[in-house]
Amino acid sequence: MEVCGTHTMEIGRLGIRQLLPDSVRLISGPGCPVCVTPAAYIDAAAELAVSQGVCIATFGDLFRVPGNRRSFAQVKAAGAGIEVVASPRAALDLARKSSGEVVFTAVGFETTIPATAAAVKAAASEGITNLSFFVAHRLVPPALDVLLADSSLRISGFLLPGHVSAIVGAGAYGTLIRRGVPGVITGFEALDILAGICGLLGLLAGNEVAIKNEYTRVVPEDGNPAARRLMEEVYEPCDAIWRGIGMLPQSGLRLRPEFAAFDASVRYGLKEQGDEMPEGCGCGRVLKGLIPPEECLLFGAACTPENPVGPCMVSSEGSCAAAFKYGGAR
Amino acid sequence: MCLAIPARVRSIRGTIAEVEVEGVVTSADLAVLPDVKIGDYVLVHAGLAIQKYDEEDALANLELIRELYRAVSNNG
Image (cartoon, rainbow over all chains, first blue to last red; front, side, top):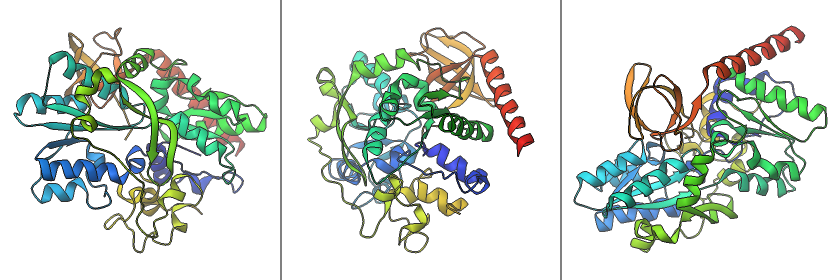
């Protein structure tokens, strides 16, 4: 199983699935942080822009993803203040130049978390009072643990996400070792992905339970300890809802109490409750790798990239979008 | 969303570097990579440089992967 949206897209684009023998089956897991961000989170942020005139600064990835009621793109078209930014620092610039309130949607896995943590610290040290962070960060290793505990899934090994690993390092995947499943830290070029698959098959053939690093040109064994310290200084773990999967213990982050002044959920009393999926939508089962996208009844008919129903079709790195664009299972 | 791009550091002011990606110049925060020097390659994600590319390591890793590819193609 791969648990990185960029891997999902590259495997699809390169046609790797179709090249492999029948005995090797690649399954896409919950690798797209946009896809697992709860619909209620998007609703709450969109509502803030509409009813309180707050400017929502968000990554482009999240812009078209529907909440239960509407997407950021839809409320922007109706006149609400939604700004797409390429970095959390750009949200800081926006707040510096604006007299109004700005809320940054802090979503993403470990790759993104240090960048938002740096922005929180910068806002605090500069005393910027019109910026807050609506935090829905999710952590990869606790999600892997939940997937491994699910007896309906039988995952032989993981292609581990290259850039998440650049932060967390090989040591963060102890859950795989404890559960007897190997993993290979894998890069994003065609040969990287083939090397990842080859490395994983080697470990499986040798009955070896280990974490191998095939992406050494970017990932040191220990990841980036300074980035992890920054994350830990600003955030603390909490239980979190993954869209379509449900509540996973200690799989999310929230701001530490000393940064409560920058917490949008405190400032505006925001809550991301519940986890409703659109009727018939199979994204929950797709995200866990229980079914390939093509087995969802909506896939390619009621749900297409032009008219998406679920998050995995909306996100450019969602499993359904990849399967629609490139063809999926053989 | 976790894709990060390699960029070459052109200049450094405080913890902010001016970096170049394919001819395009932008800025990157070096807060979690304190040892970066001008001329180094770094991996930038959401405005933050998250890892350094060691050129020698990079070439060695790529060569290893190419070797693996050649071995697999010859066997297959």
